[in-house]
Image (cartoon, rainbow, N blue to C red; front, side, top):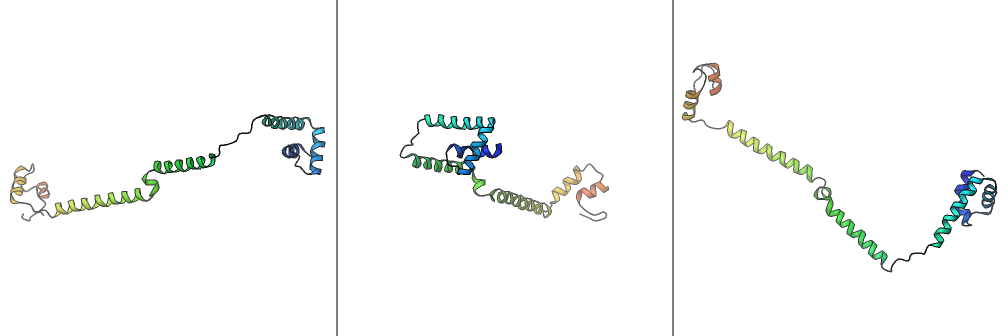
Amino acid sequence: MNCKNAVKALPEYLDLTLGKDEALGVRDHLALCPECREQARLFSSSWEMLDVLETVQPSAYFRAHFWERVREQETRAWGRTGLFSRFPLAPALAGFFVLWLLGVAGGAHLFKLRHRTVTTTEIALNRFLSPYPQNSVEHIFQEGRTPGGNV
């Protein structure tokens, strides 16, 4: 038996739950190998120290209290995650709605601008306050008429 197999079988060997042939193999290996013997001594002393300690007996209501606390933590965690974790599509739908609303509002504004009627007073003011000469290309473009056409 090699060291790897012997160390792997040590807990069962010390608990006396190992098969007869394997137990003989581990015992023979421990007689020959000082490192594995030291490992067996450490395992054995660890169990002896644990045997000295008192066994803790939980209260009669330990399980009930434990599971009650687990449920409380789960409900707290549920409350902490927020709206978007409960409804994962909510951010996408909210974003879509905002973009749709902006599109409708922008379209309505552009529609009003395009179909707006210009009064003769506004035309007169634009002509009077225009920095460009009366029949220049810039002035005609600013008024929105075609060259040679009338307003």
